[in-house]
Length: 226
View 1 (tube, rainbow, N blue to C red):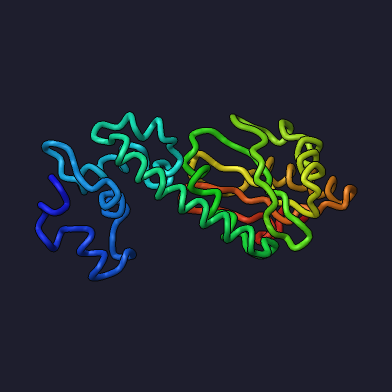
View 2 (tube, rainbow, N blue to C red):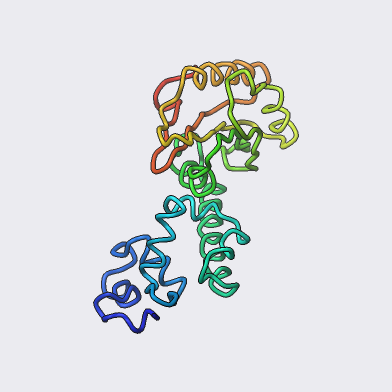
């Protein structure tokens, strides 16, 4: 069934034109990108089912093209349209990061990291290196898998910072559990990194914990001696 075959009031495109994109569900927006469903499954139901099975929009956004193309009813044309739309979203978020002073804008960082890392099923730790204006230089993924504070050494973090010639950095990691509350290990690691940064004159501005639909800034909470 095509979108054009749905009753007019149920067509996502007409709904978007009449009420704007904010009025559409995640499934309806994905359905517009897909265009058509599969036999026995209208396109909106196809999109809703896919989102439910992968675990939501953030996990859909984290899929690579090869994983997208394995989905029944998603051929190269649909897969490329969807992958392109998600990549445009990521690039727009990155451009906002590159223009913004990130000292007091943790929400921008979280918005950019979340599509890639909030849906990860394993913990990922990394850092953003920043120039003298606190604009983004580069994002580094430093560690993947289960982690304790002892697994991350300041040397590997600041090695990237020195190579980038940066003046400051923000460290980040995700919580696959969905709860962004920092652990005691997270706070202790932040203190270690902040102390090392003072010695090297590379400020650690923040430590963000990213989860599905939420994040915590340790700096905003006054944790980790930031």
